[in-house]
Length: 80
Image 1: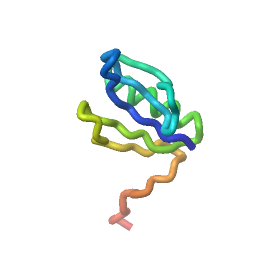
Image 2: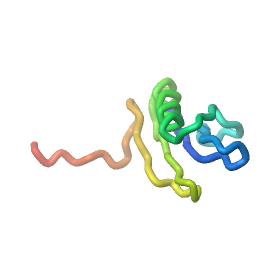
Image 3: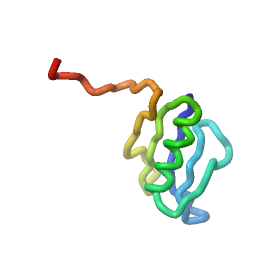
Image 4: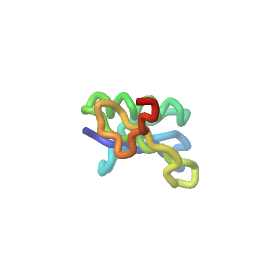
């Protein structure tokens, strides 16, 4: 399992995808949406995990679990 972060690279002006704990970016894209998609593919290929999307201020604004990762806050089933 691998977690990835999506954030704005201010020096290049592009959105970067970086593996958690990694020193270098795994990829760059022109849009945040493309970077999020790329991060989810990378995470899925490594067995799932969390993709954390950062806003322009650098703070995490959203987090998605990529299967078969373990969601720490799964939705509760209220119909059964």
